[in-house]
Image (cartoon, rainbow, N blue to C red):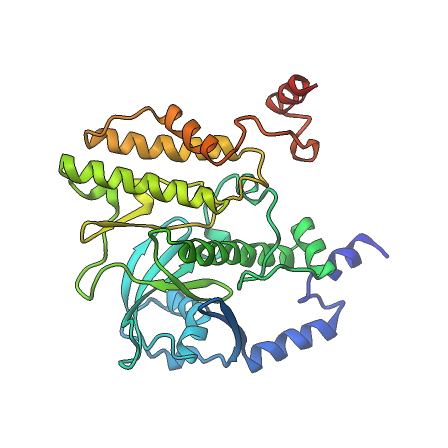
Length: 338
C-alpha cells in the first residue's frame, strides 16, 4: 500500500473509502449527536440539521457568520436548550460568546454559548504544552478509543485535525463539569456540541459581566477578591487541575463576586511535567494584577506554598517520555536527575 493510500485511510472523507463517506453524509442528513449534562448523567440525543434559510434568531449575523452559527448551535436550538440568540457578547482569539435566551418555561432564562472559531483561524500557540498527558476526547468529553481515529490524530491528517479540535473542546467541557461540581466560582456547563459549549450567562439582559481587569476596586474589595481567587486556585489544585491561562482577563466580575472562565488549556498536574511552571505563571499573573490594586504579595513564595500544601514536589520525578533530547533545558534536567 502506498503512502497516499495510507493517508487516505486516515480521512473519512476520502474517495478511496466511499463507504465511510456515505456514512458521513448519512449522519449529516439524519443529524448530529448532542451531549448534555443533567446532574452527573450525560445524555446523548440526535438532532436534525436546518438550512440557512431557516435562520430563526434575533441576532443579525453576516452571511458567513450565520453559516458558522447554524453549524455550531443547531443542536442546542433543536433540543430546546435555547430559543433565540440575542447578541454577541465577546469575541476572542479562540472563541466568540453569544447571549442566548431559553424558552419561557426554563428556570435559567439566559445562557451563554461559547462557539469556537474555525480551527484554521484560531491563534493558540504551543498547544502541545497543554495537551501533554491528556486523553483524546470527543466533543462531549468521552475518551476516544478507536485506533483509526487516534492514528489520524497522531499524524494530524485533515480528519485528525478535526478530531483534535473537537478534543480541545471536549477537554474544556469535561474540566468545567469537574470544577463546577467541585464548587469553583465559574459558569456551570449544560451541554456541548462539536464546536460549542453552553453554560451560565454571567450578567443580565442589559449587560454582561466585565472582566476583572477593567473594574476599579476599593482596597477592601481588592483584598477580598484576591483571597477568593487564591481559594479557587487551591480548590482547583485539590481536584488535580491547573487553569493554565489564569489572569484578570479570564475572571468575570459581577455583583461583587467573581467567576473564572476559559478552561481549554487546563492541565492535570499529575500528567504534565511543566505543571509547576505553568501553575507558578498563573499565580504570578494574579499577583501582578492585584499589586496594581494595592494588594502586596510574594508570588513565588505563594505558589510554592500552595503547591506543597497538596503534597506536590517542586521538581517531580522526570519521565523520559516527556523530555525532548533536542532541548538544552530537558537535557540539563535529565543529567541533574542522574
